[in-house]
Image (cartoon, each protein chain N blue to C red):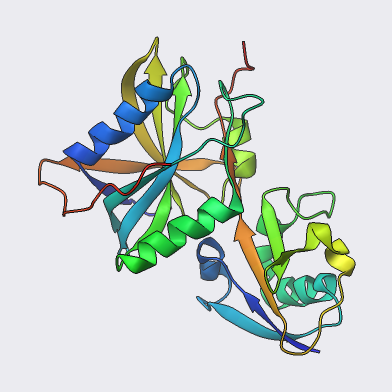
Length: 156
Length: 97
């Protein structure tokens, strides 16, 4: 897979970490909205979403098809694309599990933030390989440029 | 019956970047088989190794989830729109405490 980068503003990165801390010890989740170019994507907004896995929220998350459609509509209304998803791994590394891989879609960027004892730590992005056998890391470039107005959309 | 299948964004790279495809089919299953025959790389993302639709692949006929109809045996008519809508799921490696 070619080298790809995901641009993410410092404030948006902070909001992802904060969401992970807020929901700890449960997994948080949300949508990444922005622009996609051939080798670089830019996250311009977030849409925090409800974790539909109320039966096992400490180690599982899911986003309903209705919320997926809502994320797509939000992206479209703002002239953006739905680039992917973020979720947290409470007390677990910021790398995809087999469960993540088995349930992943290609093309999307998957940001995972590790939250150890309630403190957000490492954050990494991943993209599913075409053969579904693995994830390839996607380099996150965090910038200090302020996000556009409305960059973090309504919370669930 | 001529139906339109809407391709979700993550699968468009495997469908010649098309947002939708017009196909001839009598049921949802026939439409999906025709789709994966036309674009073979889609198959592994839609179907598990046992040949069943992956659990996170949701299929609608005109806004009705086929799970509440006759699943892949759901009949389709000319002009129907079949939408493939992702569910998103995942989670950490270790089991819940």
